[in-house]
Length: 103
Image 1 (cartoon, one colour):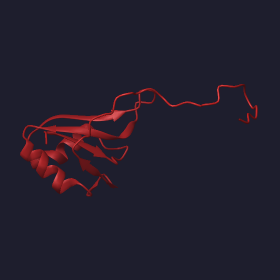
Image 2: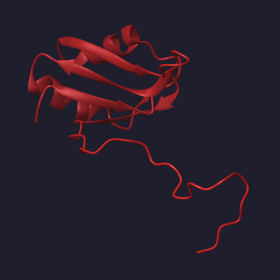
Image 3: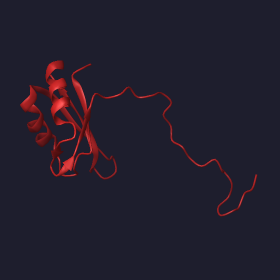
Image 4: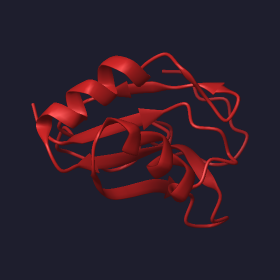
């Protein structure tokens, strides 16, 4: 499956050092990254941990998913591939402000 795991539902107070420490019980960790908001620098509540071996990642997933870390129940899974496309949504109505458009 791989050596990288997705961690969701992280508390705002969870640090990369704290997440690494929690994960090292399952095997050597090579990288920890908590995703932050570019504007505020605050955690977005999820991150990724890469283990040295697939076995360690499997154990961590099996034993940590649904447990509590820093007061929050976390979701642990193998990351899914991102779908292409990207780009934001936006309004379908490109008209003026406050106008009631009826089609």
